[in-house]
Length: 89
Image (tube, rainbow, N blue to C red):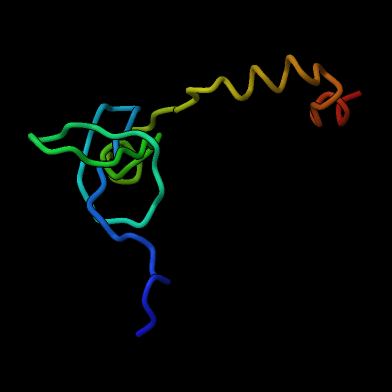
């Protein structure tokens, strides 16, 4: 097997921001942040949806719009970008 071609496979903490749920798994993802979790320092990956907050697994319907994407779109494009107003007009 060739040396120095494989990414660093290590334990990483994934943090679900929508429900403040954290879990440890192994990954090769590159991160800049770290977190002290259960007395040990781990790389941190922030995510918006995990099995703990996804409607399929929880049985609850919840709208996650942390960035305000719809409002940003409306401010940027106004009614020009809306297909419903074009179809109705």
